[in-house]
Image (cartoon, rainbow, N blue to C red; front, side, top):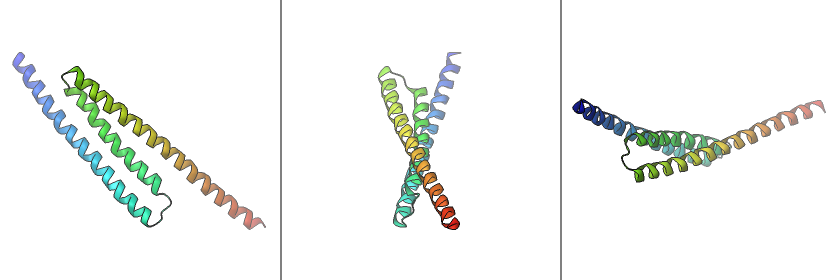
Length: 126
């Protein structure tokens, strides 16, 4: 029974290790792609650059946060738990702030759009 438990624990550590690296890689790729696209939009003077960049960063951070949550499965010591918890807290706070920025940017964009539509209607009436 102990051999089965040890083998299962080793298998779980291997699967979780691969998953952690995959999530980290996906998160980094998403953030890099969002940064490159954001730079291209900035150069073209696209007004939605901040919103698109924030959404890309938020998605990338979600993957990186997922990898940290998976990392809690394989920690062995209390000091490792504290370190992972601190990383999770920082990434969660960053994700929260980025989502807050996205909501503000979307609201501003919607108000601008409604203002332009209202302006167009009032010009047609006169």
